Amino acid sequence: MLLAGGPAGSTLFERLFQLSKAALDAMVAAGTASRGADPEVRAAFLLVNDLALLTLRPRLIEVLGVDPLAATGMQRWAGEVFSIYRDGLFST
Image (cartoon, rainbow, N blue to C red; front, side, top):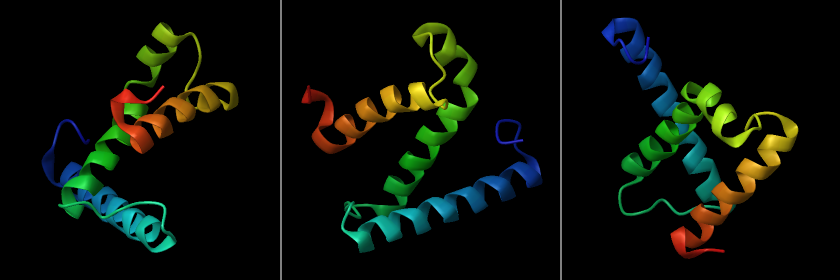
């Protein structure tokens, strides 16, 4: 639905986007994130990153040899993702 478009896909994406904005607002309120210069773009960026993980999960399992949504894979995946979000691409 999300890729094909149409009313149902658009409605679903809008709902997910609103949830992403609400999650970003909650993280800002908790002091764990910044709203950034353009909060709507930031929320959309976070949303599409999550959707890419879900959409490309089988390909990620193939190349990583671990499911990024399983316990062991999540530990590996999340560590790197948080490092990039926290420190950018120059993090070690």
